[in-house]
Length: 204
Image (cartoon, one colour):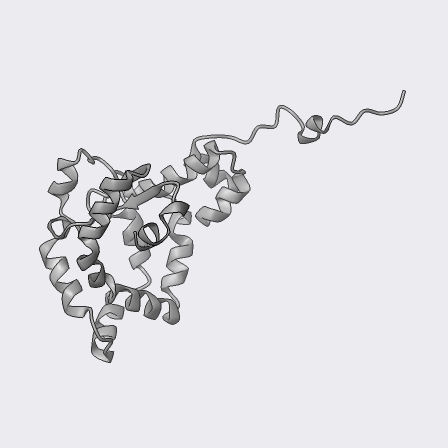
């Protein structure tokens, strides 16, 4: 939203996942923690946030709220889990968490931007995300969604826009192309050879 307001002419659309622009949209307890740990960086605050970001946190992001978590492929969160396993990455994410409360004073400006500009927007809501109030999502008609749905939606939009499976596989961090195919619900097309479209013909 900061970028959108700063360079609105460059925004073709917005994608929100579990995002709020009102204080009412926060889980009250979660908001208290966020406000308490925001502000000047201290070793104590940083250590507390890092302690709540162990490597298995990545798994929770993808499985929490899923309808059938036992059927999810671990490839979905392999890259994120690797990132969480690195000390430097956890420090960076902890420092980012400490800046979240600075968004709150900007909520009125962001609301005004959305009302005035009305950009094309895709909103995906993880129904069991503890950061925001579930009832608020329900009031917007955003029910029955799991946190990983945004990844699937993004991947399918990329595919529909002509993105190659290998590119989408890299984007998602999948080890195998078969996993990406299952994720998209599609198969590679081998009926026609790719060189058929070149249009070269041998001399007679």
